[in-house]
Image 1 (cartoon, rainbow, N blue to C red):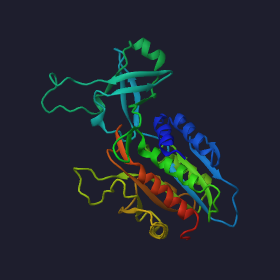
Image 2: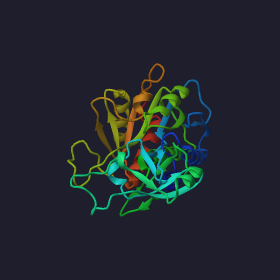
Image 3: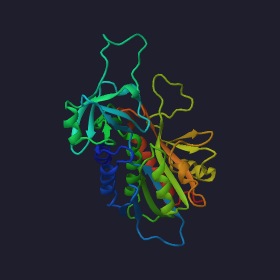
Image 4: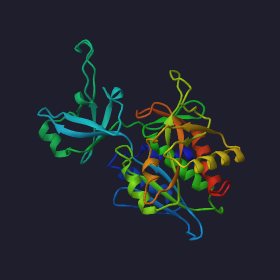
Length: 338
């Protein structure tokens, strides 16, 4: 699998929470090489790998497909679009951004800003003061834009130095890519588990797709692949991941310690770099919903370290995707069964 090509295609697709159609279609297109694929009524991409054996446990590989963005809440008399966050968008990066309005047709606009010459002392921009200028009158805007349309800061994937890349939507398209790469590594190999895949919708607005998708798939074990905070120049090293040092294996009260330990042992036995992420309660990922689906699913998180989360310039190391995929593939082959 050409990881960079797949990741670029995934990140390029629009998929703000609740409006993931383009991203779902892109992910489904890549997944069809490895699985029977469908997109359910909730916008989840569902995949079943091979023929399932009733004597094997089922392992679900999950990542969320949606991304953060904004939503149109009002059109002013002057034709400006009032917007609000859809997911945990970082307000600090919205001012004066060029954005795409996903209306009846794609429109380009800019987030309005107060020139520094006119800004009052202590005045700060926040989502309550953000409008989008699309260069149209109210009457013209209403022909193309509807309330509830999504707004997105689009930024194509770019290769940085070494093994790092930057893009919008790496949270969590890099998790989707890691699962696709794991399936590629498992091609023509025997697995210890039946494998199913869930690329879940609406994680950024309440982990809703994971709730419906995991209920439907009814797996015995689950791996939720997401991102976590990576160390940068201004951070303490305590509690942060390090780019290029492998996936962070989650340990938390809401996760299966047995499954976490099995992944740690798998990494050690296989010589795959890994890190530990300790959380003192919930994980803030789809794992929280998956683990309490039906009568309970033993779940672990594998998190790719990422800098500048919930901005259009997220940064990851491609080696972490590869090591995450290798870890999943080794476990799926029964390196350390539970």
